[in-house]
Every structure is written in structure tokens, then in C-alpha cells.
Image 1 (spheres, rainbow, N blue to C red):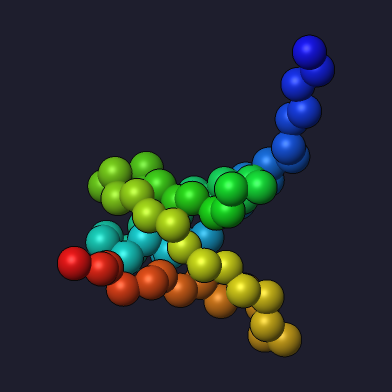
Image 2 (cartoon, one colour):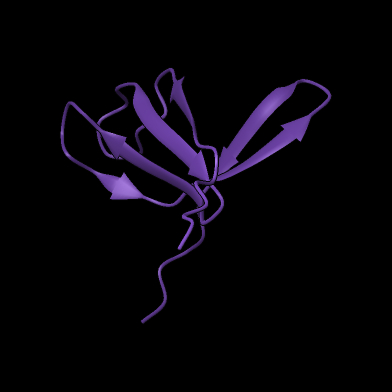
Amino acid sequence: MTEVHEPTRDYTIPEGCLACGADLSVRVSAAGPAGVCKACGWMGRPLVTVTHRGLRVTYQEAQA
């Protein structure tokens, strides 16, 4: 049985943490982006969009 490894990319978004404003580490894989703040421990799934001005990072509202 052969395993297929999907490529992943790691990025740092300066001041990208919603909770504390620290740098946000983001890993993008086939499953989508996932972010974690090393300063406060906040975790989330940011939506990263490429625009003509650079990257735009947004977050979906929480569903109750």
C-alpha cells in the first residue's frame, strides 16, 4: 500500500492573531488553512485570499 503525502506550506502572518495581535503561524494543506498563535494559544481556521494588494485574512463567524 502506497501512502500519498499532500504538500503543506507554513507561513507567518504578522500581527494576525485575533486574540492578542501577535504573529500567527498558519499551515496550509489539502484540508485547508489552520492557524495557531504561539503567544496566547488561540487556534482557528483563517480564510486566506490573494488580492491585488497582498493577502487578506478573514475568519468566519462562530455558529451556535
